[in-house]
Length: 520
Image (cartoon, rainbow, N blue to C red; front, side):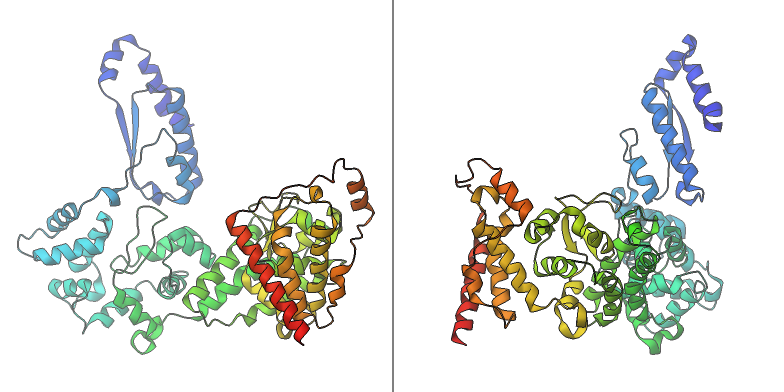
């Protein structure tokens, strides 16, 4: 309201005065807003930008411009992408020569640092004038606890050439910031994860706010550079800092806690499980609290990041968590058949195909799918959306499938060999028993021999005579078939090259499995 009355309305009113139109046509008034990312009331910043974009859209000729500086954080991204906003990324438009001139002007000495040292400082600044200013400030004595060092010694520490005092340098820098909330968590995430993360990704990984990550990073400008855009990865300015943090004898109290990885692996799944434990079965279908979908989406991402960093990470800690959510539905009809179909498929399974395989209606298994939400995704659908036949069902992480197929880990939740046989028989019935014009889904044609092979390999009670059994559809399916006209006309299913290759490979797998069973 203040901007409307103090800025927009007066400028629009002035443009209506004929005697001022000529002067307005030559130039525009510019309002500069510096460091907008430091405004804590970000909701008001968003409102301001929305209002500004609207004003310029409704009044394209208004002689007014805003020059806004600051980092583009997530809540600003959509606004700056608007066609009325032009962005300039200084990191992409700043040359090393510009930084060298800036750094040289800050020092104010013509012959020190040397040209190679200025070049190295510019490299460590990573295109950021703010980072360059922070480095120079440290060298010139901005930090009190480095008063015992000369500027020349501080310069060598920043450049990493003074290996003898490097540990002391790191320890002193970290000491000033160690009391900040989540300080060691942020440092540990940067040091331990193999894939460098952006600020939003770090905040998601740790389950904290972005500003809390930025607060930590801003406190150690000589060790890490904060990029201008949120999607840029965060890395240490010195690779030797990672080595220091990983060596407990060198880093002491700053030794990164590898436990943080395990904590983050469990944290988000636990949030989802606790929430679902508090719900009745009927409430599974209701919209979730805002934090729950974030936790459900994030936990498999965290686990992948951790496994990438440490392939030997022990996944057994997830067994009790998987059991916690699965056991609640264990007594539901068709539960194990639904699990088996999803677990035995290498690709997402259409919800409609699950119904076809089991010859069931939507309401027969929808509650199971809703209840599995913490560990089961339905394509890109939002959590509150109703289940549809085209939903692509797949476990959120491979480790869930591994758990279900391991009898020692899953115990009574194990997908038993009898389920392999049941699914194999259902596929055989659908592909070879139904009229071709009734079956149009490619996965049935591609996958039936794979399930047959699994049944033959794993079920000692598998009877080869089932291959000769006639198809007996249940009443709803029979009525659907009988209602068709011209079903005797063959329906052509065109498989792509990769689909055909997959089908042939599955047929060979089935033939080999049957041959081995016969030899036994």
